[in-house]
Length: 86
Image 1 (cartoon, one colour):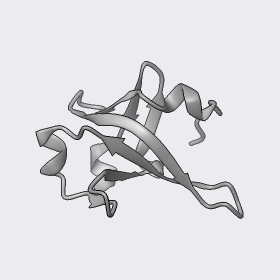
Image 2 (cartoon, one colour; image 1 turned 30 degrees about the horizontal axis):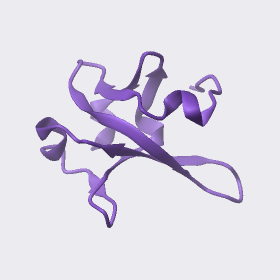
Image 3 (cartoon, helix red, strand yellow; image 1 turned 120 degrees about the vertical axis):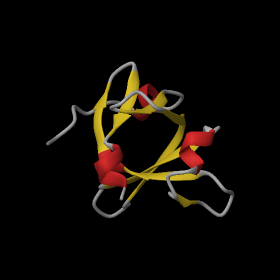
């Protein structure tokens, strides 16, 4: 599956939700492999209590890191597949 290319500024600040509608937080930034341009993770700020229960990787500054390959869609929200997080 490929997502349509979107400028980073269109993704920053969007709410991250699961496909079941659970809110996870707000997109702060995206990490990528500089050599290939491959997107690696979405950095989430203001995580919800639900997000903390998912046992996700965190950055040194305690921001939540969500693997980019779990994203299903980007529209009004960034939608991820919760099953793909485990």
